[in-house]
Image (cartoon, rainbow, N blue to C red; front, side):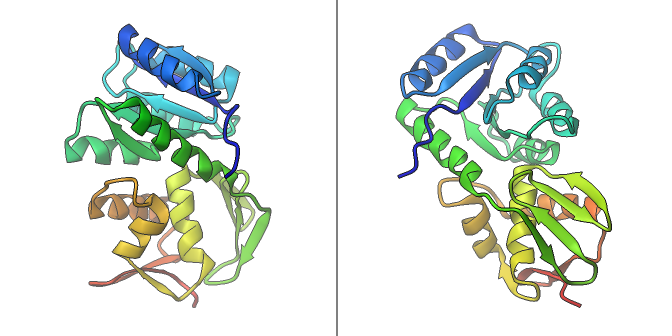
Length: 229
């Protein structure tokens, strides 16, 4: 088992009791834990600390979690962290809004410490993937950098949220292969995460907005494939 301890984690919540409780349980497992009480503070600390993981509440003063996530995702000077919303809002629309903002995952409160620690370990394992540029031939040349989570198309580089990146990487790894929704959910999100099929649609739409419509094809009633023509 890989040693994931030592990663820096930023907890963002406007409830001091929650911050104290979570930081205590996470810190005693060997992680470096920092806390912020609002979105503006979270952005500043992210720029200073470059955390591996941000656990981000949605409802906060000054700048809510959705806006905070958007600001962080647009900062090209950052090594993009994993961002998971930690919130009591379990409505489907809130999850969709979070994923559209660039979140990688969604954790509902209240959560038991042992379950949270297991979730943190699962999220951090996504950082263990490494590799250089991979050139994928298809409709156009495309390069994927697994270390930076960047995609380069015709010399133009763009930074993708981790979930969008992992979805693109999956589809592009085997151009022409059709992945159904169940396969995508299992491979990209994993069994530990409960998400709806609409989550896939949101991420596909965001990828098409950034890459153009040429790369990902919808196979009606089945799933998606990376265009190999």
